[in-house]
Image (cartoon, rainbow, N blue to C red; front, top):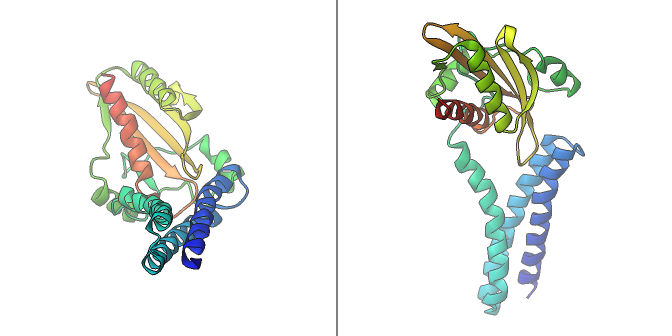
Length: 236
């Protein structure tokens, strides 16, 4: 009986940690390190709950009661498993751009990152980062829109708004748009800069997305750039 009881309480504790960790990070109660720690502990609680539920089920035969703890424990394990699958072997980098040779530069984001005490530098990491990106995300390439820069600028600005990003700069004369996107789970704020330049036949659009904290982004920045470029292609 005690195995099933402990398993149940571990499942409850894991659920609490799973909710409290990201929520506390999002509202600023603690750092992302604490949030990830809670995330990891929730998985450990889930694994322990599953093992104890199995032991309790075999020892008591109360599989109906054990089944509830098993389901809860497996659900807790599923969350980090999905995160690992989502990462898909992404390299430990957090700064992704369509132009690794001449990445767009942040302007409006600089004071915002300073005010937030961002751990990551806004400076691009150079050839080493570029090589890792090109290996992991070869599809992240510039987009050429077959419209003049003023029209392209308006279309890009509309799509940024449609994606729900917070626009922090709109400078048509510089061909620059900056925005902040907040991740769903932990509430991380990532900075985006979009550069538009006239080219033969239209406007070249380059995008850069970078995280303020963390070594690796599990592919989040690359996915963000893909969403914008896909929306722009669909818009014609």
